[in-house]
Length: 220
Image (cartoon, rainbow, N blue to C red):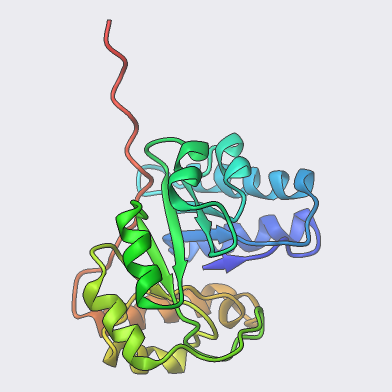
């Protein structure tokens, strides 16, 4: 799930609390327009809200900004082709935080996995109202990306509830959703509908993304 700054802090806090209460397992804060102090504030709000959910708390990821993820105690960072390479992002956020990578072709998939990415965003799968792409990704690439990746792959770009079955036919049952939930009349109900449908299509127990494990204590 991708969310922007929501215009003001109160609206952001309400949305995040609503999504977590509905069972959202993973949240990415993505807003390229916010000045750094405002982005830091939003991420800290999301991290605090996640921590209040207890042991099975949602994962909070920051888009692009490995520095913000590190200082705010987020669970990781997601980087694209024009951002820090995976190894450098890992150096910034530190172990054991997650580092995700966007991949638009198989070469990028293989490179990201080789560099140690924890998960991939693959696409764009459909026209998106939140980010412009020159063209949708070929369906053959999407299928091959899931088949050839040893880490989880999430469909990105224009994902809506009625497109989940098409993605499942390609072998994709993990998705990154933005406007289909944030612009819904009832974001909580939309979240529940997505989670239920994905669980049905995956034919597997519900997936739970927990925060990265804490590093072992230092020796004497």
